[in-house]
Image (cartoon, rainbow, N blue to C red):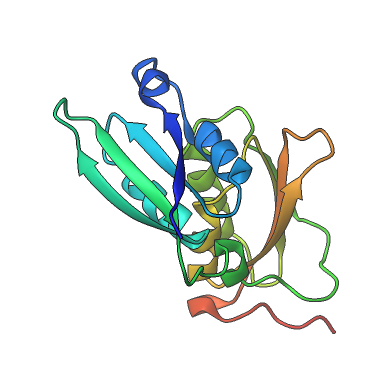
Length: 179
């Protein structure tokens, strides 16, 4: 089966100082079965490789003559589970959040840095609530590494992502079961 590619050129956005991640993810979401993404960027988009890899895409990349990069993301024959599926989600009832954060006005990676710092100050089983302006795809694997569970999604306004983080035990042990 031949893959057809949808072109996404984020070089103008990057040169204007913008953040193209939403543009890229919108294009990925709009792909039809058998379609891939041809990305043009001003730098080698290393973080994006694992993000789209977790969504079932393989990649080939090459540097262009002008120093820009072309990356072809093709659907993998053996698509892995989405990254979110690898992050533990707490079962059962959650306690009320003890800490609330509004990170919607911060530029990446500041929301992730602040959330991870806050989790270090909390006890196992406690819950943190945070509001974000985008889906925290780089945060989720970091929470998993630290043994924290999470639940989240976009609010009805469609622009605010709310995440709840239940603090795990030390060294990645799951949070204690509710009594």
